[in-house]
Image (cartoon, rainbow over all chains, first blue to last red; front, side):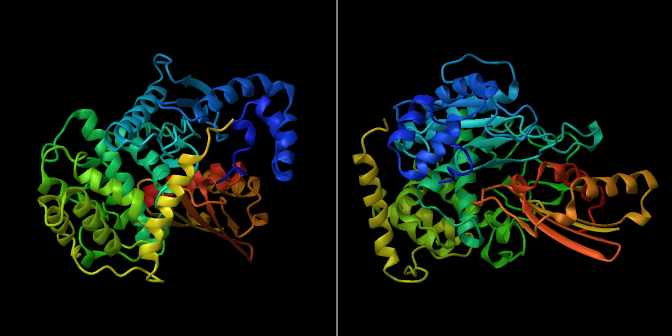
Length: 387
Length: 102
């Protein structure tokens, strides 16, 4: 965990720091002491932030959202602007981050029985107005970060709006957190593209659920509303028709493939993690449409159980196909319509989900990883809440 | 001064790439770029600037500058890029967009 990136004072109130300074390991004590020495000028703001964040970091049964404003700077998390239960601020980005992280929490909680990113009620921390002209959003290992797009450029040069504008992007970023706590898919090549695809899948499900849309009625566009009116595109990706989301003189054409035959080996973007994710994205779309109804109910559950219990850091597309097939069999029965839909979904991208599974490296990994995941989960559940 | 700039990754996974010979730019633009390179102390930066963990959806930059017989390349993720370098990265992103010579 990147505690070295975010010093303790960001998340732990001073009384806890003092405890740690006395009772922690030597390294924890040093860091706690260092953080207790913050200058008086910043103490009041930090106290306020630390208290809110500590509240958010406590295990709980409910949503604990905290929104910060970086005020176009790059220091994280920034200034505290809204915490759980506060009313709207009328700053669009702040309120979208709050509502979007709430909708994401609700999907995971209400449908899959998951209590936040770590399944232990971890607070959902977002920073908006990050940097100037920052046309991106990312997950930094402990929080979400959103830029405002091209607000620094002259109007006709602008390509992007603020990145909180699309609720599925908020679900996408939070799902990177879920993946980091579960399958820990390595962020490169096929496992990285699966990591990206999981974020698109649950991001789009957050949106479809918020809109109460069936698989057949949904547009399956990722990032609708992110582009300025000067861009020729519906969004940044299409799960329904990968490769068709945009075609623009400046941005070029959407490069996503929808079949293994068109898998792209590229020396950038960590081996094309945002490109080849089109393949598992399309497999999910076809599966969800085959099953019918609301995609988050069955197709989403099959993918969620696979992410939580079955995938491992080095998983390939073939592994994901085999494991979703296995999960569908366990959830809905061997040979069930749902399991057939999974086969149809992966067949559409050129992968046989019912083929015998070959795990990378040691064949024992296939047996060991689910076991280790289960042990980890039991271990976490048996831990008393943090003091 | 020759500048080769590549930005990849990001939520969108869009790759931007441009090669600029400042000799072909209007004088004020060329001067502005030279200033930004100097302010960033580009030639003093290490070849790799990485965040300790690979953050999903971050941008990755690769910047090569060739001037007066010196060539230097720096690869970095965006949160690892020093604040003094950010204006140069932003300007090059803007130029790469309008060029689209990839």
